[in-house]
Length: 204
View 1: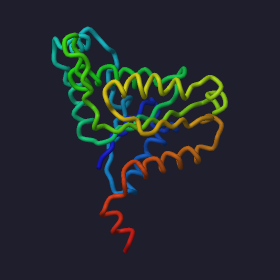
View 2 (view 1 turned 60 degrees about the vertical axis):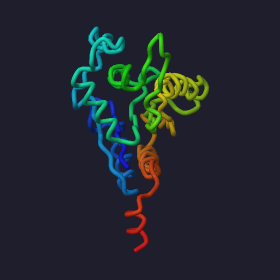
View 3 (view 1 turned 90 degrees about the vertical axis):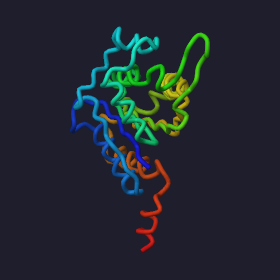
């Protein structure tokens, strides 16, 4: 099985990128494959324009960059979003990627006549937010529930995708990053069942 790890951070040496790499290492250690989509390095354009609105209204086909991202997701069984928490949400680059890529006609079908058809029921989703504030601060302000409402339900449930885990790596600016990196690798290791090939190798 394969997972697409989508990461949004402008610095390749950031903790966010380190978390994404460790998720990939965990996936590989269980005998599965992964691909990393580095939105900043790939210069994905997050701007939702009039052309994207025409796609939403089913008046036009998605542009090549959106079709490429949709095809990339389709090659994978799981989607892992790794991002720093900016102003209690995900970065604009990642939100714009979702705005444009999860379009009407691919992620869902909606019309006033036919209602809503969710088209991503096959997709497993995992969320890893790298947060600067400590866990009690997020708990006090109800951030976990807010994240589930906005992202788990508002984005992925609307498309039928299943969010299997939402992890907040809190206190990231002062805590030793080793603990967060270990958590990321453990998440990757348990993303899919251990492959038969890896099980056989471990038994030797």
